[in-house]
Image (tube, rainbow, N blue to C red; front, side):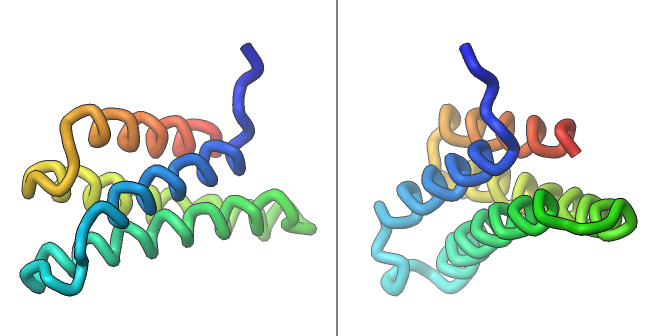
Length: 109
């Protein structure tokens, strides 16, 4: 089986997060949960965009800078995923899948 590229993994991650968030009426949630779900969606989108930028970087220095930023954003995303799981905004299987994907992306950098 062909291994997915980091961009494909990030696109899949974004799609999974969007699917999970879309299952909620975000506007009717308490503020903390609404903020967390919107943060998850934003971080997943930002990770995909960061990886695209990393792939098109013209210099090694630019790639290194982007890699540092992506690692930090991936850590934030992973923490938000775990927090969403603890608030029962997503199931254990989703938490495990999304966390595994973020870890895979971090190891690919």
